[in-house]
Length: 183
Image (cartoon, rainbow, N blue to C red; front, top):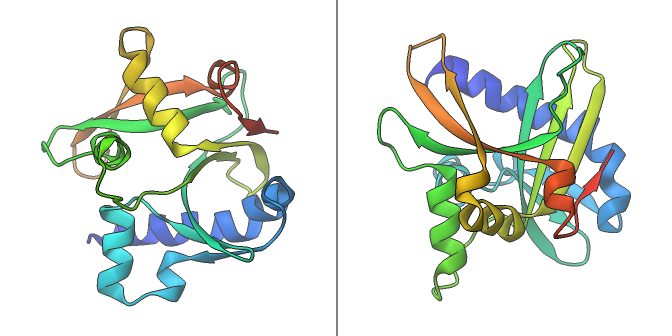
């Protein structure tokens, strides 16, 4: 894994643990959060992240997986975006979060995937601007069932010139049909 990617993952894990989780812990009845990087061997941590999409464990009398996406920027009339973003396609052709989660959700094989998805927006000084959480299955199935109406955003990685396309779903848009908690 490239050094820049490792640094981004560590930055995201720290922001989730230190900034996001304290604000949303009550949504889940308390408990504690453990980063996948902190509690598993390197090989298994990579599989949980890359294959299952689990970034953290929520422990509260039982254990469930959480996917987290943290985006940074300066507040403006458009940022924070207050949207869930799910990678749909990579220029490289490597399988994306969307296809992996959809396969796990649609299978009868009991494949592991994060029960909860959390999307947060943090300014460049570390202040939480907004955050929302939903069931991962609600988000992925909403995208699948509304593909023609979903906004797609293409992002180019300035570091290596590769690009990816993301489905963009507003917190309020998804909240009209399922339980979305947000601040």
